[in-house]
Amino acid sequence: MKAAYYERFGPASDVLRVGEVDTPRPGSGEALVRLATSGVNPSDVKLRAGQRPGAEMPYARIIPHSDGAGVIEAVGPWADRRRLGQRVWLWNAQWRRAMGTAAEYVSLPAEQAAPLPEATSFDAGATLGIPAMTAWAAVCGDGPVEGRTVLVTGGAGAVGRYAVQMAKLSGAQVIATVSGPEKAARVVGADLVVDYKRENVVRAVNDFTYGAGVDRIVDVDFGANLADSLALIREGGTIVAYASMGQRTPALPFYDLMFRNVTLKTLLVYLLDAETRRRGIAQIVRWLEAGALNCAVGPVFALDAVAEAHAAVEAGPSGTVVVRLP
Image (cartoon, rainbow, N blue to C red):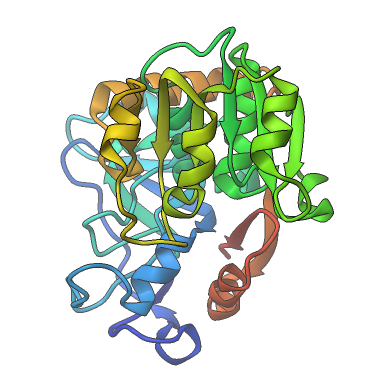
C-alpha cells in the first residue's frame, strides 16, 4: 500500500516520505479500514517534530496521524463481520502504535472505528477523532450542561468550534472568545462572541451575564487565561483545560480555586476511559445523523503533499487539515 512515514524526528520537509509499505492484516478483534481521508492535528505535527515528552522514536518507522475516515474492508477473528462495508471515522489510530491513518489502509481495534452516517463526507469524518471527542468530553463528559452558562476560549479553533456547537445543542448558554473578526465569523452557535484582542473579556462576559459569570470554562490555554477564568467562574464551577501553550507551567492559585469550590480538570483525549468514550461517540453519531454538527474541513492535500499538509497545520489553518488518500 502507499503510505506516508518518517524514520526520525525533524521538519516535515526533511523527514516525511511517501512510498510503498506492507498492507496490514487485521488481528483478533481488529478491523482493516481502507482510508479515504486522514486528519492532521497539531499533536501529529508536534510528535513528528519530536516535541513530546521523552522525544525518542518509539518505533523504527511511524505512519502518522490519529484521525481518519474510510470503509471497513476486512475484519479479524472475533470482530463483527456484519460491519464489512461500513463507513467509519477513526480515533486514536496512531496513539502508542506505529501505524496511523496517513496510508491507504490501517488495521486497528474495531471499537476504534465509529459509524459515519451516509450524509457525512469522508472529509468531515477526518475532523472528528481528536477535535470532536475533546470537545464532547470537555463540555459533556461529566454531566449535563442544560441551563448552564459555558465559556469556550478559542471558539474558532478545531476543538473550540465543536465545543460551542455541542454546548448549544446540549441546552447551554454559550460564550466564545476569539482573536479577531475573521475568527469570530467562524464560530457556530454562540450566544456571545468576544474578541479578546479588542475587548475586555471579563467586562464583556459580566455585562452579558449580569455579573453572574459562567458555570463551565472549556479552555484552550489554561495558563494564559487563568486570571480571566478566576474572575469569571462561579462558585462550584468547572474549568476543563486541554492545553496551556501560552504558559506551559503556570502557577496554580490553589486557595483562590478552593474557596470557590472550583473543579479543575485537565483533559487528554487519548486517555478517555472506555465508557466515557462510548457515550461521546454515540452522541456525536446522533448529532451527525441529525445533521446538527457543522464540521470544519480546512485545507485539503493529496498524500504526496503530506509535508505541505503538516506545514499548513503549523501555520494555523481555518479548520482541520485533511489528506485525501489515493
